[in-house]
Amino acid sequence: MDPRESKTQDQVPLGTSTNISGNGPHEPTRQQQLSLDTLTMDDDGPRETPPKSENNVEYIQGVRLALVIASISVVYFLNMLDTTVLATAIPYITDEFNSLLDIGWYGSAYTLATYVNLPGSLPKQAPRASCAALMGIVMGIGQLGLAFGPLIGGAFTEYASWRWCFYINLIIGIPVAAIILIMPIPDQLSKPALRDAFKNGVKVFDVPGFAIFTCAIVMFFLALQFGGNRLAWDSSAIICLFWASGFALIAWLVWDWYAGNDAMVPYSMMRQRIVWVSCLCMAFQAIPMYSLTVYLPIYFQAVLGRTAFQSGYTFLGTIVPQLLFAIVAGRAIEKTGYYTPFLLVGAVLSTVGLGLMSLLMPHSSAGMWVGFQVIYGIGRGISLSTPFVAVQNALPKRLIPAAMSMLMFTGNFFGAVAVVLCQTIFTNSLSELVPKYAPSVDPQVVIDAGSTKVREVVASDQLAEVMVAYAKSIDRTWYFDAAIAALAFVFGWLLGFKDIRKKREDEKSQNQPTQEVDQGI
Image (cartoon, rainbow, N blue to C red):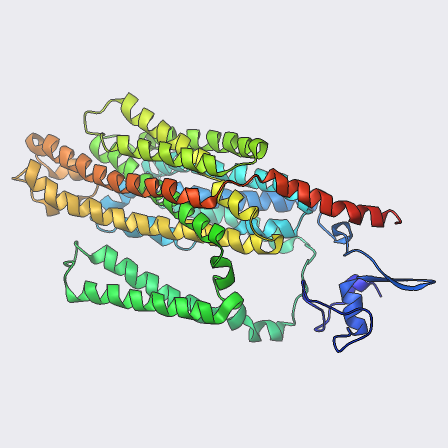
């Protein structure tokens, strides 16, 4: 029997100290010896051999590999597309439902569900030497969704219906799901019996931790959504929601510590400085981006009077530089070996770009809002991959997929929080500034009208003043974004300055003895 096919419950986990000499209480069983694949027999008896080569593992190749890569790329493209496709549709959605107060839900409801990192499973289907190139293909195609999202969303909204922003997921997603379900893909890990899978499901998926954490974030979002809008900040309901979410968060932290490595967020991983600093930097990058994705199209459509499709291609001033400089920065990090300087420079440029955006008014020229976007987009692109690179080069390979999922979750979660926070800032600012600049206009009428219909409910002689209040309310969200982006510069120094090229050289030197043994030594 092939030792690789022997997968029993007695299999020794990676890293377990095993006495193979036959002496002592920890003598392995025959099944353990076979599963470890660390002994080989010859005429002189047993001798040690190196661990099983990765070349002996079965991976998909040829057409199957191409189909899997294409399917994952399309799914990631849809994931990124959904991040920005609603940007140009949100002003029209606020009109249909007659309220600006729900902007936070439009941007955050989807975002909260997107922390599952589908490309994270790719390393299991291809050799490690190919993973970098394949991940580059997936990430490159996926990032195109960011660029096409505003254009597609604007076209659907203006020429069909904003609901097509959601229908497109079914049209593309169902065939891709069918391909993945039909495609025979070898399992790299042993699977438990179906009965055992259901039995251990609660532990594996950390259902208690997930339930506690869900309660905490739902109550927190409700407090942010209703505070200052439907209910006063000092109302008993808002205060209770904040307190309850705080207690639920503490309970989740206690549970996470108790569950250890079986928790939704492994406690031992989060204790490592490089991990939690990378997560913080990821959050500080995501908050301005998600906020900008929502409020820049509102500026174009409500303040400047552009159509949904027009606001889609004007938003490319942010997306295109981000994509281009993400590629440039990735190559530069590979050549220089240092990622922290790129995070710091990117944080500075992002902060400057967001600060300049706070100068935008109804009379601002195209050169201003394009130039400010380009500055921010360059900064965002330069620093985009640095948290991922930091984690990849600080953790063992077996922990990298979990760490990647944590980074994605952190970015999407805080991005959703940012949309709700900025919605509160925006609507509260409208309530304050509309009476200041247009005393005869009821601010609630402006809020209830929605972004694009505000011009229809305000008298023509008051419209200019209301647009000033609108622009200044949006500017306040960018004050908040600029402050958050600056925090990435502060915490980025904690990543340290490590030459990742040395790790590659160490890995090559460690693999050399294995190659020699395989050749007959």
